[in-house]
Image (cartoon, rainbow, N blue to C red; front, side):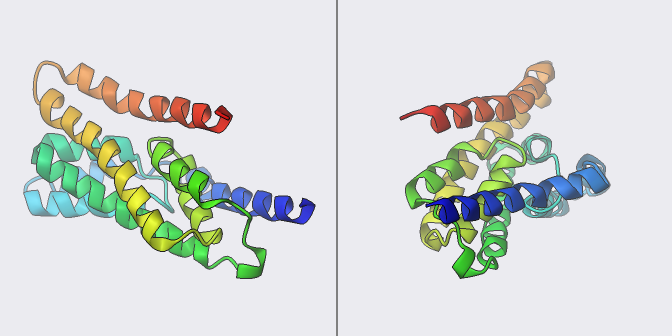
Amino acid sequence: MKQGLSRTAGVVAIALLMPIIPFVLLGELPGERWLSASDDNSLRFALTGAGLLVIDVLLPVPSSIIATLLGARLGFLAGWLAGCLGLTLGNLIGYGVGRLWPARYAPDIPDRPTLLALILSRPVPIVAEAVTIAAGAARAPFAQVALASLAGNLAYTGVLAASGAALLSTQWHAVGLLVTLAAPVLGWLLWQRSRTAP
């Protein structure tokens, strides 16, 4: 029991440090500036935004701002698809990184809470990336992790792309930015509530 707990704590600590260390060393990457450089071409803008969201699992990228800008620039549907695709690919990379953890040291994390955590933690910076990596280390089934990641990303990027498409291009841009800033806070509150629920 004690050994299983220490293994789990070790994996969780490493999973948290993986996104935190680059943030401390590099700061937040200038995602908006990189998007602006490709603003004259919609396809390049979509690919740049999706690419930034892919690397978000390992490097500090402002995912809520990027996903909102994708919706504002590309429209709801294209922005939603680009954002969801980028974050989901990033989750799968994070899962693969977690799988590199030696199997004999894999933590004892039950599948269901891990999958629920994948969905609920999506808007929470650092925690979302750590949960994805921990799911790989815990050897959670790939298909279930992929499905949970897709579900969480569809909801998260849908809200952000809708906010960008509907509000940033109008006089309601302040409300659109509020949605972008509120999504991580709401995600964190839901995450905390799910952890304390019986």
